[in-house]
Image 1 (cartoon, rainbow, N blue to C red):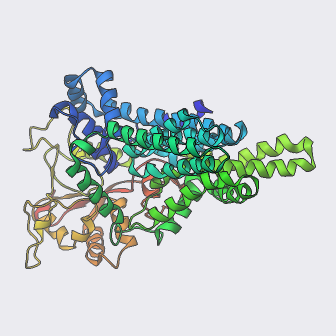
Image 2 (cartoon, one colour):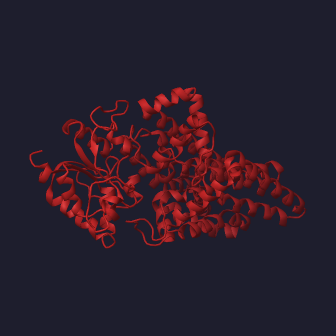
Image 3 (cartoon, helix red, strand yellow):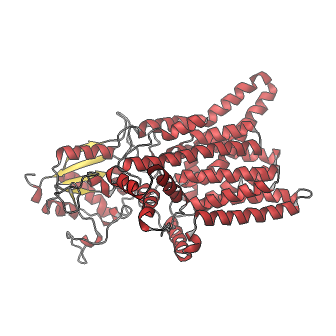
Length: 555
């Protein structure tokens, strides 16, 4: 099972490289781990995400490359290798979480429940897909399940070592991703069960104090500048809360309110059967052992309520609650198989096997499909290859924010044609292009980031491109799709894409969809994780438009 879990996580691990297309992966953990080699200390100066995973990567890079010079050379000459190393670390931590969940389930109930819960998390789509990226979502599962293992020990044995393990996992989980703190609820429930047991009060109180102290200590060790630079830490927490709340949400966000969105995400992130089985597991445990209800059920419920109340929501943000849901789902299907098997004991092994198949099939199918997808060339890489072959070096181009800045560079070989070393001269996208009188100008200024691009886009930009000789426009459906989903909010962007289609000639198009498959509508999860079976390769629909009027006439 662990071999299969790891294989699914490593399959397609080089997707997109040497270019990193996930904005968070490109901005946060790897780059900050590399920056530590140059800045002289380990202060991340950034606490929107806690730094434990960044420190792990820094340590791994130190051992793997041997020091600052080798790391700097690797980043400059071929970032593929360093991102592969980081992604493999995430995959290994995700696989370790599968093993820890098996141990926790075995201690809480029995080995069958532990094995089936671990198998479910081992093949389910969300934890498998995000093991392919150097983000902190999957690594958080390792300390989360470590804490659950300790919590299971508290409930069944009540030893000091179990409190220490649960507290250690809690502290490390919070230091890896703040929402990993959800495992505090099972820990408190297990301590309360011991407190209410005959002769258990003193042990529970002392154990809970021990767990709290070790959790604080582990958090401080894994995030030391939360103490040493407390002001920056506090400001980072406030900023993260503001960003997550998101006000009106992200442009193009679909699915209505947050709680329904997360409930829907469970139906594909784990699967329909596991999602429904988790509900059944809560009911079954109410009759079988209510202490387990208190341990397993409040965490996911409160997590859904809290995360669903935010202004922004993504399926991967469910990750810290998934181990608890896996345990509930495994318990439910095995209990159902056992009850049916009591009537016909000879069929019991078959029923258990069918229960396991029903629980894991959806996740396994889509995880295998995504392995195939991620192992193929990204549409953005295909588009760049076409541009290199057909657009002369130094040509003026317009690139929507669907690719990182490095995409315009020949890695390891700065261009001598452009001032900044890019292969092509990119149109400077900035807010200052919109003057106070509403006219447009070509000027430097504050950058328009990916989230705000459509809010500053208008049809007159196409004329500005042509008049200034920017004759090639590279567009991606992860930007235009937002406009389709939120057309009333950004009418100027709608008009922009209509004019671009009228005045531009499609010179090249790369589609991620299989031949004959219907395109998938824009969604902040499916458009980036490729869950639908219609996907054949990763990436958005990429279109290269050739403008031929004004300054582009004859180009």
